[in-house]
Length: 321
Image (cartoon, rainbow, N blue to C red; front, side, top):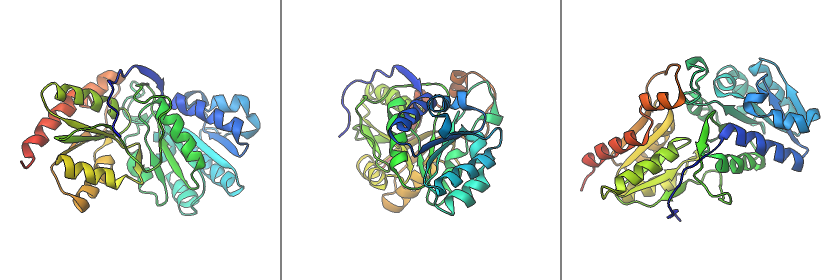
């Protein structure tokens, strides 16, 4: 059932920090949990795990390809390894090993990419991962998770540990608005309808969930009813939630902090085309960004509530009455 109360959207922890804390909690509960890092443990927050369980922590240095191989080896030995680094490094530098050692063999490896998207800010485009959803999603057998806040991250890290098979978890650098109550339940492959709506649907992931909630509130003031769906699991995607949204609202806006080529929007469009075609608009990146403050970059590249409102008005003009 959709949530009805007012969203406060106060800033909480960064999703990368929530991952680190959840991993340490799992480590206390299950001695099969291991952490593997590539010399970025303070940034990925695997340092929390390493401090408590140094015997189950492997530092591979700046060698992401080797790190993926080490994680695959641990999985072959019956462990549940979480291999973490910046998304730009672990997905791009480690892709061959992810393909051959993890996807092809269907190893029980959990890959965690931090500092995803352009909201990492001043580090610049070389470290901004805007292809990670498409890369991880292209790997057969991989589950792809993209939590919106600290609550979702903690729950999905636990779900990833319980899932048998390869998983990619996308997390970010900045503090994220808190969307969910602490006791919210999450299930891999099941989207969450946060707000009911009849005129159009926002289908969003990650930081764009909070922006969609703000956009919905602005549209509501104009008498426009927008549904908001959080796709925290990009693969396997919740086809029924998307089909129902297309059928019941007749218009969809997808927003993501990722390249529109190969991202969430492409996957949603495929489902819409196969089930219930309707007008769609896509918000995301069309090229690499630049160095700047996180807020300045999100503003410049159109990843704000105002941009979602504009896209909503556009798609409504194309909607059949």
